[in-house]
Amino acid sequence: MLQIHQLKNQQEAVLAGLQKRNFKQALSLVQQAIDLDDQRRALQARLDDTLAQSNQLAKSIGALMKQGKTQEAEQQKQTTTELKQTAKTLQEQLSEVEEALHQVLVQIPNIPHASVVGGKSAEDNQVVFQVDALPQLPEGALPHWELIAQYNLIDFELGSKITGAGFPVYRGKGAKLQRALISFFLDEATKAGYEEIIPPLLVNADSGFGTGQLPDKEGQMYTATADDLYLIPTAEVPITNLYRNVILQEKALPIRNVGYTPCFRREAGSWGAHVRGLNRLHQFDKVEIVHIEHPSKSYETLENMRQYVEGLLQKLELPYRVLALCGGDMGFTSAKTYDLEVWSAGQQRWLEVSSVSNFETFQSVRLKLRFKDAEGKTQWAHTLNGSALALPRIVAAILENNQTTQAIAIPKVLQPYAGFDHIPLP
Image 1 (cartoon, rainbow, N blue to C red):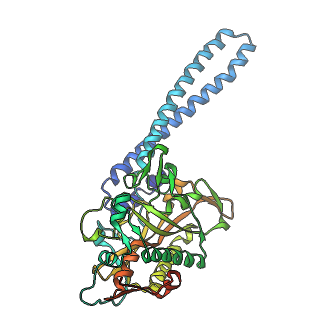
Image 2: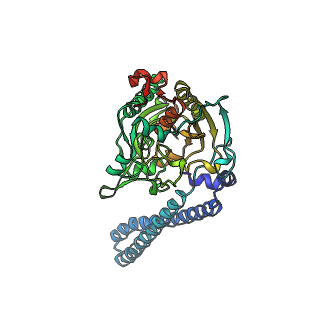
Image 3: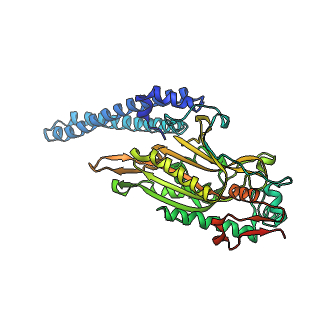
């Protein structure tokens, strides 16, 4: 969440940044926030003055009583009562204005980093890397949803029967491939120095607010309404919230966590090939990396995280590309995001498998996540996270890119985890 002093002291830069996002409400919301803060300050000043007068009179009443000036003391008591009522009214008005200011601030997205280009949609994203050659499959190559059916790896109909569309049932070698990928991603993260976390799969509203899912993405989250809890859309939410309302010591930074969780999203996918099979699900598995970082090092860390995810794709021998997202395609909370996409040879298109983002202080302000530097000064930490990796489209690309007429080859790095080097046609 942006802070009011940013909007006031850096108004021109804030509006220019929001223009990169093509955020049409920028001027209106920023001005509303500034006006409400002016009201807040005026009310606070009046309240402070009223309370000061009341306290001063309260002290003088005792002295008047000692001097026998009973009538004057009673008059001041009446004035004190009136001041207390005025203070109560001012406090109520102040609370209303503070809440209104909060509601405006939570509608304003993060300011893009200076390196982020403006744009309206994914068409304006920049390709910063792409592999030289894409796999050429023989004629008759199939998309993954047909391979899944042929090889009996995942059953969408059973998932629909048990729960509904978008909740697949993995079985046999399909389940083992899924488990192999999860173990591989976690082991690679551990070797890279990440601490593994197994977090809860449900979070409360404070956690959803802390990382920016609430109120921005409330409609995309599944809710346990009786308990006012939310099923997590990503492990980013519970892992980052480990540090909510925490003041760290500078020497504790950086903090690097990794966690595997199922993820739940109520995204209403449209019909068509681009959402068939594993392309878009309501429940899917993902390994997430989360960093809590010193502000001076967070963009170096962002590049390192991107390179780490690239390394995973290289080890899986998947052709990929890296996109720097334009302002209009970035998430609400992000200051800069890289998307990593793999080539789907069966569908002849790119599939997003990871987003790596720096949120700067946007989440930290919501989380009240700070650290004390060597001089004892308290600063906001920077938060970052990335998919490392989301499994459904990785599985889709592995199946499509490694298919032959009689089998599907398993990447060498996964074979020790899976226990087989290919999936034969039944």
